[in-house]
Image 1 (cartoon, rainbow, N blue to C red):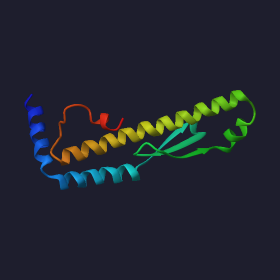
Image 2: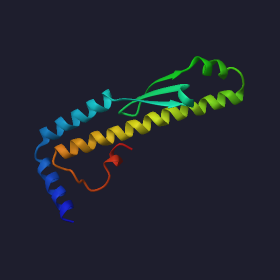
Image 3: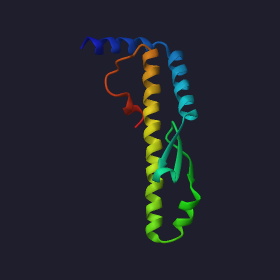
Image 4: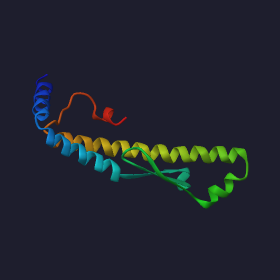
Length: 123
């Protein structure tokens, strides 16, 4: 209970320091923009790259996968699943890294034990 009160007091103090909040917001936005996370699918047949804003930046397909996609519908369906696997792996990594960034920034603001989960801010 006292931890929550302490966090609320720290948060109230921060509300008076809008410039500091702007600086932290800018750092978080810059980190999200520059963060790059890769995920693999199909044992490396597909590589997806996303940023901290959860935008897909690129999808790289191995030539063998691309050639196989022309074979039949079943192979195309399998390839789609492998692409989804790679994208989801990259997104999960980006979420975890952004959660770490948000937690670090919160600690620097004197808010180490915010009520609730910071991950909720990025999901």
